[in-house]
Amino acid sequence: MSAGWHTARTLLTAVNGTTLVGLGVAVLCGAKVRRGPGGILVAEGYRRKVPPATCFTIGSVIITRRTAEWLLHESRADLLAHESRHAGQYAVLGPLFWPAYWACSGYSWAMTGTYGTRNAFERLAGLEHGGYRVAPLRPGLRRFRRSTATESTRPSSGTPSSD
Image (cartoon, rainbow, N blue to C red; front, side, top):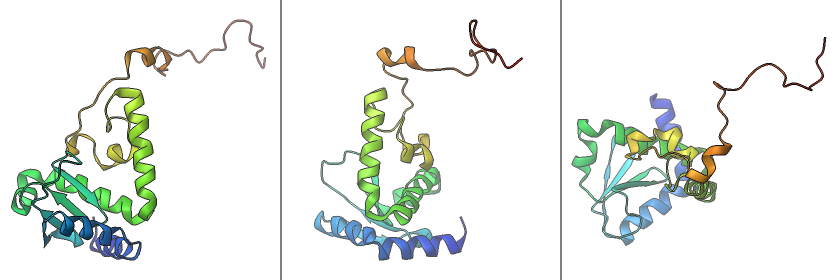
């Protein structure tokens, strides 16, 4: 990502108030806030039970149960990029991110039994990089899935043709 986007993302999440909410959650939960790369803030040492994730993002604040060094280690560059993409989603949607994200989580749960597999926000952030497993559709829903590989491009019998 470009430095211009990082600056815009940081400004947008500050103006729309989501970073302030992220900082509030971090402070109220006893996490220590440090600067991260590209305008991201890392709040380390989150101790609440909810959400159960190792990391989650609010505005431009990535909140982690672990240390900032753990998250910023080069071996977790994909996870950091995943969480940073969520900050970009907050920049675009502001507080509307929350109901949109939860609606997508509900859809994903209904379809697969997981909150992430069919969640558009997690998919756009890089599903596997965020530690989500890919789950198949629930068994009762599989029969409704259409496959373009098996569909015919010819009209079915009894369908008027344009000949």
